[in-house]
Image 1: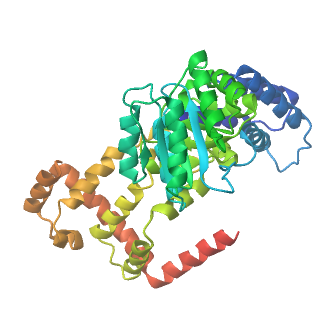
Image 2 (image 1 turned 90 degrees about the horizontal axis):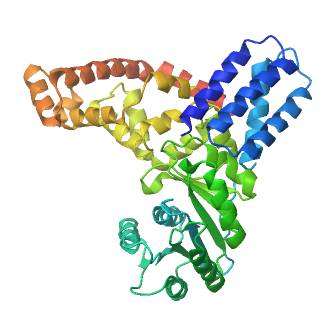
Image 3 (image 1 turned 120 degrees about the vertical axis):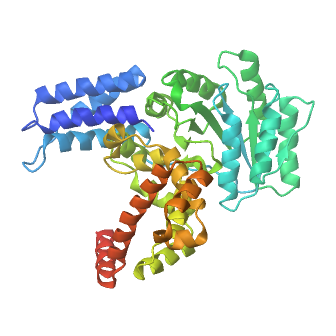
Length: 444
């Protein structure tokens, strides 16, 4: 997510750290480079200009302590201004006092509205709500089938009527949700160009008819500052409540995320980075600013781990470590738990400083799939006692996993090293000391 943008910022800050003190000259040089980075990322030029002016004003007005280096100070200023640019605080969906809450989803063609609607339903379902999806996109031939399929996969009912106009489907869907005790109704509308007057009138009519409590504008994160033009047009017609950035796992340069809030004055409420239903995240401006500047996003990483990791398995692993009994069974379970958190590249991107490292050490999620296949091709006894795996067994494991004997040997060597490390940690004294250190660091 924004890897290229993060690397460019990191390069600027590295050069700045070599400066002895802050001066108007090195501030001006740094900000020229930052402006170039923003424009390369397709940030709206007015937004970029205002951002640079705000940073410069703060940088020149700061009294710098001797203990603070120029790099640290300007990074802090840029970080603060990025948060301001992105929206200061997170914004949640506004729920109706009397159910159902009606959410209208609108946006450009190909922005991923239908998939987002299903992800939002899945997200709300996990919060204990009972959503209904309404297929009001009657323009795209496969839209109704797509939403019906997605709804079936996540266990959320879909209201769809053929043949019928979008306005009638939306109105009837809301009535159906009200009669069937669905506390949230998500209306998926057709993708439209902001210059398509007939289609814009249709979505305005839907809004007037169903009186939504929340209107979400969905935009492809890869569209750059074109998203600003579209957002302004949709906001003029619909006065939407918040934006959603989709396809954040693609080659997004950052222009849409950095421009939208400042240009339209409406918050970004969600981001979507992946095909899985649980890839939808609430948008936190401070966390996004931290990712952009290569500081990672530990808070989101921990939240994701808490949601995905099985507590019983974690307790079991802890007990095994205490007994120095870390096996391939434990290793396989941890691999499977980690996969639930998303692609490894995304996980590493949330760790501070990993943006520049990952450039030189590309992450291949397929390598983890191979490791998993190799372990799954072992017998239960081999997973518990890998020392019995001889040449014949290695050939059988390689054949069963679709890999080579050399790859099997590599996994066995790596596991042996890991097992030695785990045994060291599993010694009672060292485990307790580590636990105490971790508790102390958490208290800090």
